[in-house]
Length: 128
Image (cartoon, helix red, strand yellow):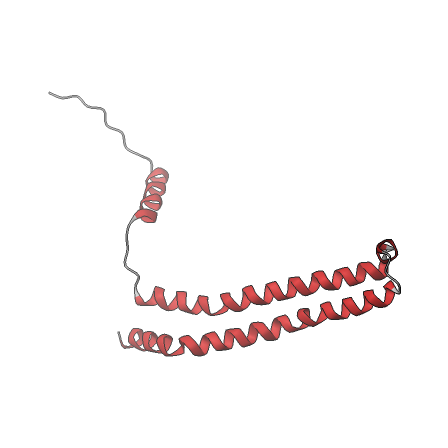
């Protein structure tokens, strides 16, 4: 008679094991998951571009503000550094102000691009 060692895991450990196992199982993507991913993908491109544009503009605007508010301009040897600072700050405001309209335009274009596929998938799901 073989006397082997047998061990059972607790419910918490069983749950953890199942969660780890789910990560490595190959599963087919169903239509609802695909529809959710497509919907989430619409805003990603616009968000990335508008963030880059806004941050770039904020950095330029900050440089202009630092010329006006500190003695950086005089240390750099710029004549009329207050004027340069104001102009650079205003130039920096332009991309900051354009970030949201750029986001909206890109998001609208992406929605138009994937609309036929989203409508087709949603129609299939509604018929089921």
